[in-house]
Length: 232
Image 1 (tube, one colour):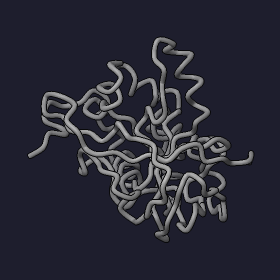
Image 2 (cartoon, helix red, strand yellow):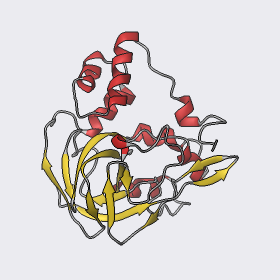
Image 3 (tube, helix red, strand yellow):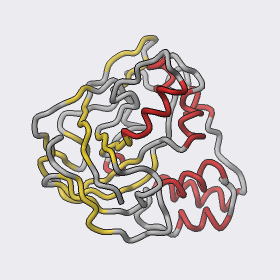
Image 4 (tube, helix red, strand yellow):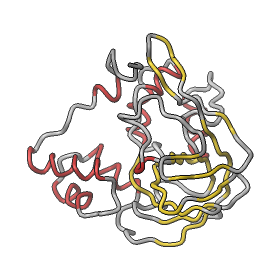
């Protein structure tokens, strides 16, 4: 694994995007220490807690390396970090060298990789690119989420270090390949189902696919629904 450098730490407030849609995807950089607890990073908010945040998606990590790809694909956009709503940006860690269940020390906190990120239509709303969520998913440049096993103070000046790897056969990239690109491959579904460190949501979906031989409809997540994300 290459040397890892924390490039940025970001939090955001839930805001209206228009039409009643609420999102906290437009996060801002912070340099001060923040308390990282099982529900998330400092005062970071989620626009719709039904689908975002929670103990198994407490921190979103997006590799800074991916920005070169998006700037080349869409050169008319500057793509400033955090363009993808991430909480943590680094160099040296990508989906190909991080595994589900990996334990990382970051500052005073202990984190565990819980699942890849499932891109949703809020990305398209933010950047006025209807095809962006599908492209993020197809490219595998999704990033991943952590659960927080030990709360603690963290900051952009703290290093992040891999301290344990229990499932070397299931990289984040492989999990995405099985989930998105080979969604009915039974061996791949069993691989996901048999990994206790993978989030309950992803394992439940794998179990349903094995039982039904069908893939759930992704259109609501990728394209959006009229009422999703609206405040009550």
